[in-house]
Image 1 (cartoon, rainbow, N blue to C red):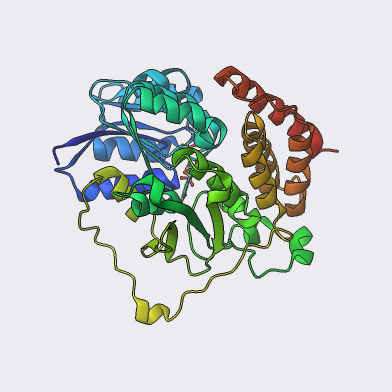
Image 2 (cartoon, protein in one colour):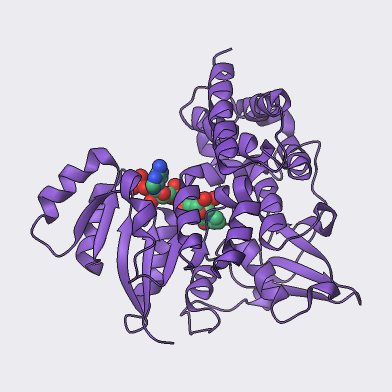
Length: 384
Ligand SMILES: NC(=O)c1ccc[n+]([C@@H]2O[C@H](COP(=O)([O-])OP(=O)(O)OC[C@H]3O[C@@H](n4cnc5c(N)ncnc54)[C@H](OP(=O)(O)O)[C@@H]3O)[C@@H](O)[C@H]2O)c1
């Protein structure tokens, strides 16, 4: 493996910081060409000092602050909103790591795909809302998309080297999130802190709330459908609280391939960055004797209606996934800011989804218009 030249979009987030930890272990294998963040300029400044990228970008409000600090350094300071789509196409970049959250990742993702780059993506929102467009453009421009999300990485690994005609279905595992054993009668009284206490994964706040509603699992179903070109009835969700099996693939002969590892996002990040090579990670193996047993349950769609809603949305397709994603982004933000209760999340998102007139095989413009419509609709419902 020669030196891979990498840009990280969202370097100040949970995935972005872990990606930099992985890269720092292999200074002879990676060169950080670019870093982008949004608000967290202090952390971005420390990252610029450590990795000396060719460019760094932040939100328009933070560009001047960074220029003042790095005006005389070799790192060029850019505006993430205006410049990110062209920055990911630079000839000196081999791999674009998409570690930023939300649908804001869609445009740079599409741009990187059209430039034929290798894209290592943790971001699922772009694939949820415009998966068909991204996958067909990736085929057209010979871009490779490698998932970082642990479940999608597991499926990617379980499918490697096998003919698709032999695949029966994928088994997408779910830890069950922080509320697996909390009765739904208590959902109305849950504090933000309780909802953010994920038993297995340390992640950003938005995705942790989505793990509590199981909306995150619903997004992953839609993401897997797009990434691996699956029918909805080829995806089965298996609740597996130990989160050691990260997903599985069942083949026509009844054999099941599974990918197992400790719960540490640095593993799927490293695999996406070094693919197809596997390198020493410095992280421990699975200790089966300590774990003792692995358990499995069916998901409770009555207790977690957001999952059922996302499956319905995945089946309908068109502009509906964009509406689901945008409404959820607005509503989860309102929950995190103490404006609504936990149980309001589903109530409001479901209402927005129900009100939407679905456009089939939408263009990018229609997808973005549906996103905007859903944000306004959800915002209007929050105070009612
Ligand atoms: N965390 C996990 O373990 C995990 C696992 C699987 C998948 N994912 C997915 O990976 C993505 C990132 O998750 P995360 O947990 O790392 O999120 P996070 O900790 O909230 O970090 C998000 C990153 O995106 C940047 N950002 C936010 N809004 C932006 C905008 N409008 N334009 C450009 N950059 C923006 C943030 O910058 P500032 O902080 O500087 O504002 C930050 O660097 C999400 O799509 C999530 O679903 C995460």
